[in-house]
Length: 261
Image (tube, rainbow, N blue to C red; front, side, top):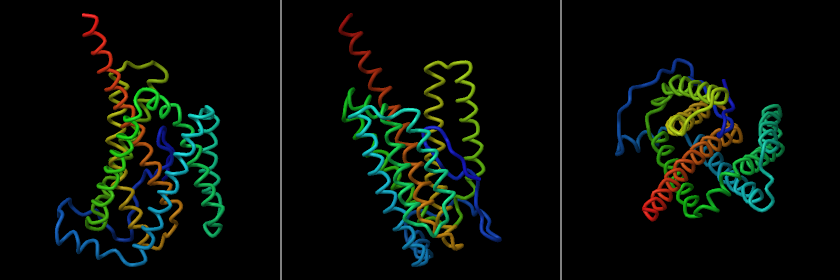
């Protein structure tokens, strides 16, 4: 089953297993065995992954344009968020063979997603532009590392995480629902942020392996797979940015208190 989640967008939320597949135990490591595992990926799947990551990069660029448009003209808000959801729903209703249309819808969704998180981006730019750069670089490095770990790991090694991550995502959604009704303190909000960061970092690994496994079973829909990784990336970026802004604000307050005293 697929789910749309706050601050992240669309991502797979249920494990996919091929016929007779079972999640293997965690093991291995970086070395010759890892290289052998990488060689198990067929040329067709390798080509598919290249398309997925290339499309992901274009989607991130489109999202950056959307965020920039918000900084210039303050266009981000509820309408862009609804537009993003609508674009994703439209994308999934279009047949796979209409590649250009689906690609355009993905870029539109990425643009609107960028505009939707534009207020947070603008806050970071106004407070300290280096925070935004550091958050993006940190997210990119984490994404690259966890994706590589998933690629060189044994096939289906991390697919067992699907059920655990789905449960964690459900808990996160219930926490956000409860907070919207009863309100929450700064401590509970930051717990949600850190917990959400942990969940979506896990999805980076899980979704990468799921994409590889689906490709091995003939699912070469690189647009849908790029969308999944795009929303993982944005979900992690948003949470890292919130954490860094909170820490920077706390440090600024501490400096002001010291000056007063």
